[in-house]
Length: 396
Ligand code: ADP
View (cartoon, rainbow, N blue to C red):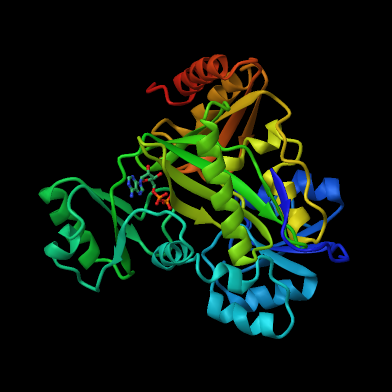
């Protein structure tokens, strides 16, 4: 889907791109950067971080270290992000001195804290679950104000479900209170949504205001961590239209230049609620590397370097992506399992070369679904997922 919200401006494409963050999302930008002939330079804390291997230059420093970003800015024409754990106030001075951030800091500001993000969505009449901010040291009644079940979320720095607690009963509330009282950050309480499915979409916006959306996908989480993404194209048109409209509106309201992943809950009455936005490439868009004309990684680089956006069309009828999380098996046993996965037809394994830890995202696999009809693709996608998980998540 494509629309233009402002007239085209003449744009001089930029060449040296700085990335704050050196994890797998920056690592997967390599192919797109080569295709566009760009130099990637990254800011990341450790020499073992995945993207160090593909970067033209590296500034070592924590993600929120503005001094390191100052050094990065000297080497680059534009700076973008691979995660949102940034130090916005410290970067503001750099922006005022002329560093170009894409997305701009103003576009990022409402999104970095989950409470601010929900308030922004609400102010723009975009549907979200009911939510309230919690005071410091909340009481039991604070946690019960939306009834049970409810969901408690760290307002900042939550990822892979680590800052998300589902409160199901009174003992769960008591355990959560203990955790809250020993934590330093701020928390948000929101209504539990009894969703039918979880959906996600990638959306990109160019410097000239053009917005493109990728196919709407289904995500499946296990223990609040994304395990699988299904791209089978069996969602009702009205649901797809709601998702696309929200994605368009959000990018336009924010005037965001770059790419964003948006996660949704689909309710039983086919309403779509925004769960979360991520102003960067996203796990739910990894399939685009193998199943779309332009990957989400190349698209981010196109947007932030001032190039026209690429086509978001699928190059296969469908696809699945399964995350390869660290398990309890000895790390040496991963190699056998990776070999078995590589035999799955029309598949590609990405291994991020990160230090293995149970529950950590260590890699992912994408496999294509060639069937002509959506119902056949769903059946095949489920079979693929079963085979992949039987290999990767086998107990012994
Ligand atoms: P993270 O930012 O760590 O990915 P999320 O806010 O996306 O955390 O939550 C992780 C998962 O927890 C979601 O994908 C969903 O399965 C579940 N979840 C989160 N919020 C709610 C909610 N309000 N109602 C029901 N389930 C929720």
